[in-house]
Length: 229
Image (cartoon, rainbow, N blue to C red; front, side, top):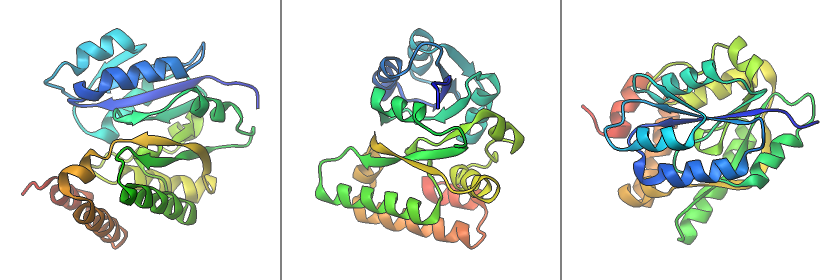
């Protein structure tokens, strides 16, 4: 399809260590007419100052990734809404893939690769991508993109504290069909795996998704994921 405008929406909270590099990469990747929207959820570091320098729009709102992404989407003007995490690395080749989507494309995501150098991280990345292709469910690290009109019609992300990406993917899959799965892979930080340990984090991620699939409330899963009681 002919090139269309893209709005990149980056939810942020205390990401000063990564944010300048991420936004600078996005600025280089985006094209004339695209826009970069940063939504800060109450950062206490220098994230707001960094975003003010590099973003086209800076939006301040209450914390919560789903709430922040919805706030950004309400102010965005692009044909595509592209949700990118603050610790994600990408370049112009990823933006080019959006330009090559057919006119009937509705939503999708990219493959992902963890930034760590261990072979295990390559295996984890491959399993994440395979699971997504089989299930037609995308996670936030995979850079979900969706047509703005469809996103609005569906009400945006469910404003829950965790698994908002899974919830939106389920709704998109049900109403719009399977996602477009694009390459090359986005690179996302492996910091969670490195901090918590690779195998314990694998177990945590899979167990949380299983419990969510069985109907556990997102609030309960959030407390377990972040260790809050």
